[in-house]
Length: 461
Image 1 (tube, rainbow, N blue to C red):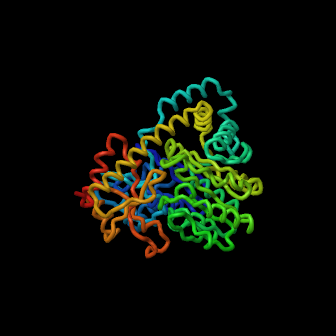
Image 2 (image 1 turned 180 degrees about the vertical axis):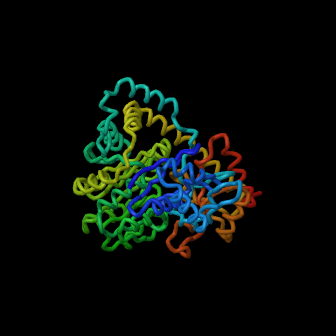
Image 3 (image 1 turned 90 degrees about the vertical axis):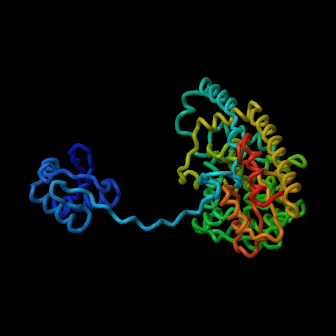
């Protein structure tokens, strides 16, 4: 196997396998370059004389290879036009991976859940913290870090989570991850061939990920008070969003919290607590993390995606000691490191109190938006009502008698994008129907027009 370059004005790298002969090697190399798109349709190839000279082959060998590819349809040959790459049929469409609905950008009014107002990113505080880190961090801070996270961030997170979320942990039990999906992936890999249950409804890509990793992934029903504990059987783990169920928006009730942890202790199962929107509570102080009641059974997961920005790809796990060795091994093999500089900057924001100040500002802003959404629905959409509004960055709009699919299509035709509640259910018939509205998503200056567009498109008065 040899690497050869042909240069006729444009460089082309050809990987020639000469073991079966020069002609066949050249045919395969050019065929592969056309198939892969490295040689685009219409590209003019050099003359056989030039190509033979560049590749160190006999001209007759090159001519035979080109003639064969012309016969197969990879190349075309015409008088005075030379030899060119022929247009190739379009490849069959690839199956789209399961992705969160808010990942692809959309044109128009974006009210899909899952994003904060990105204009709230604390640029000034982040820049100041970055300067402090660059001025004070030792050179070693920019080398290869512990795959579990920098010591500084793990120490800051252990303190912050204990103070703000009631999490009982140590820096040694913190594992920093590249977003929540990465955190879920390493948890699943640490659990091995186990059974894991998710709430129904939930983000559909999470059970899909667990199933892809070889776990038996099931769904368990929920209601306004969260997961129905009686539905638990012999699962090895269960994933819950107790602070603000996604997407229904309820909070796991105190009696169900107690029952869930009793089940986990009795069966030896782990509970993965996705602290989704845990920092954003509007009717009272944020509900403390479930993990604080059973730190040996609950894996706590938090992220900076809603509090700061999802583009940072920063998340963290507080891991029970019994699972920590397996999870650290899974994380070490996963090879999804998080920028050490971003970790150090976030640690600085936590220690300086800037993160708390930023969250207070965001909490106030999102509460005002929630109230404006509620007022608009009450005033302009008679009979409709919102649920799941005590916390978080989204709400569910229920329009009695309306067809959810038709509503989503009507909104989309008018440039307003929301999620249909049914898309989160394993079995569509179980859904009560509704629209999942991310009221945090638009920037502040565009929120009034986004709200008006939503209500108007729904036929509001």
